[in-house]
Length: 225
Image (cartoon, rainbow, N blue to C red; front, top):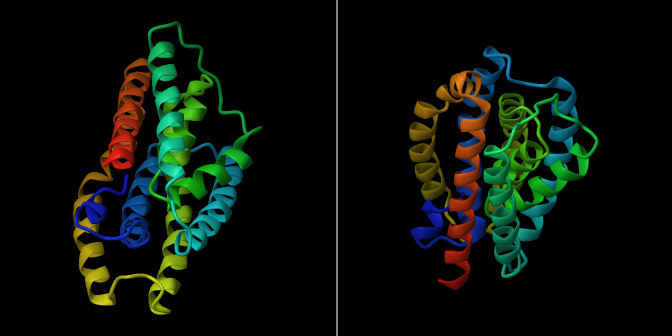
């Protein structure tokens, strides 16, 4: 989630602009890793990526001019439900199958929109697909690969707003903060494909469920803080 720049006092739009610019590089590295380990489902990817880009660009455009007091509580409630459901499924017999692309387009659009408002692409899209019984390895790899295109589109939208003077952020500060996030992110990203490939599905489901609940708790904290 987008906590660093916000914690430093940036506006939500400025923080999202910095994080998504860094994600262009980190998600490219992660996507390459997932492709090398054959974690990507092409059919699902071709539905998720365009829908996510459309939703993300719309969300970034709206965020530069609209309040976000409603998105935090809604995202927290959704993540809590999904996180609990994943943990419940993890301790039952898991029947894995290939990801179904039936709901990929609306799910991708919603995930992209919410991601531009403060994070949510991975938690919402991946956890929703995994809660339906889809193989964690394929879901994580496909969602991560699609995120590169989402991050690029959102970053470009925010960059236009920055150059137009709409964002409360100067270009020098923007570049310095992006560079810092890129260094740390690229160092860890190559491990993503390997972990998704070798981790047992049940353990991976538990890990994602706990992470989603942590993200939900962070959203609740942001709402009341």
